[in-house]
View (cartoon, rainbow, N blue to C red):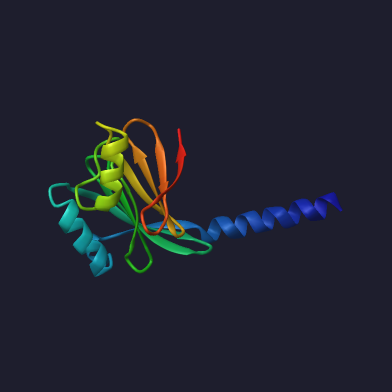
Length: 144
């Protein structure tokens, strides 16, 4: 019985590994909305490469820049994550309401990562805090 469970789990693992693959694509293969986002907020950064991250539940686009930043989009081209690798996320990406909250409560701190988590948003700050906001950009949690 243990052999059967082991073999079954190995088959499942191999199947999932075969499904989850990354594929390099060209910038022009990104959805138009993703290209517009990049030209709007990362016009001075050079794209290093673009890939499709395929998982068993679907796929997402990942854009890597030479400066270490990374942007992720869902399969429709909607923003999922901006990670500026400890640098400031470009102005205009994080909503003004969130920026105001951070300025008022954490002077000198700035957002280094902005990420969508289901219906909420997560802001990682330069001081190491993670702030969680609901869909209306109201603070709902803090993690240090």
